[in-house]
Length: 419
Ligand SMILES: Cc1ncc(COP(=O)(O)O)c(C=O)c1O
Image (cartoon, rainbow, N blue to C red; front, side, top):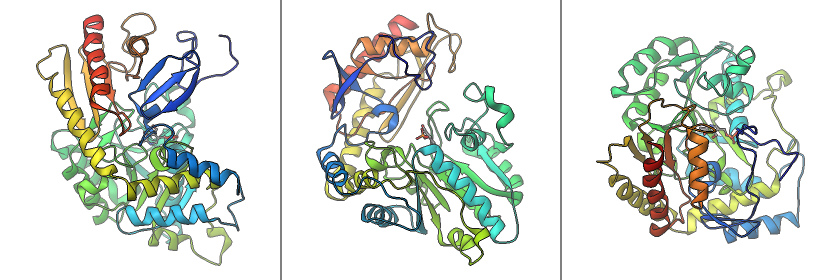
């Protein structure tokens, strides 16, 4: 099928054909020609309860007939008010203000700008940002700058501002913490994905290290930005990953699962101190950021419905049950020498295929290992999109045990073909 559409993170010369998806329900997608595909990565990590959850669909329909869009400067609306209050109620203590935007990347841009605005407002400007090795924070310029340098952004290096980079916290995080201790006194903020670095390779680290990173920031007055765009809304086993470390960030970035994955909506939550540093009769201290669709009422209605689902349905139990099912299935790979680095956090598992050239650009054959694996899984009716030789499973919380078996059987067979 020839199409004028230019797809994201897609090398069209190697992957010319797109599946035309017509419908989604629960953990399944169905193509226009009737092929069912199990969505084992929650459609790029956004879908939490399943596709087209009836309560979210109903909220969208109802809101669409009432108010589609309204400027969000000088005006507000009930769905945004409900979501903001709901978020304050379920996020770690101390976050008191909610700024809406449209994607994970913009939630990060907002957090970085608020961090600098905080220091400027206090009359003691700090400009530097600290970030982790292997970090991924999105694809807008500021978010890319905070992300690890590599294949995703090498072509745009000249546009990126410099950040201070900490080693990934492996081996107890000693080097990471020592680096942070050295850099924090001059830094505006540390930005980090709590417990799970997603696009950097589904890498995990311990809650104790996260807690120690936060303590070091506190000691030097450096702001801590938690990028929970991926980890938020249950993925790591708790509603937010920060909970496992018992920490409250100064700025919290949310997107993906905020609307249950149904519509693009993001939020950056901030403490009273950060809001206060911008609060003034001096218009120059305004937080100068917006996008046309900030807090779109329909997206907010979806998010309000999502928050209600977290309150009234046994979502936490579903998350715990999925974590158990994932652990069990991953365990069966323990002695399979074709795999290494088996890991699980909450509902997410990952394992690496042992190949001679690991990494995102692992060559394999044809279009490269990652795309070839994705094609292999697609032919088995599964949506998996490995990061090079790293295969990960991040299904919506409604997935069943037999459905997960389909996924892991295919992963085992993939090793037979590709290792
Ligand atoms: C941790 C993290 N931050 C930010 C982003 C960017 O989000 P978006 O793709 O919605 O801009 C992502 C996307 O995968 C992410 O995983």
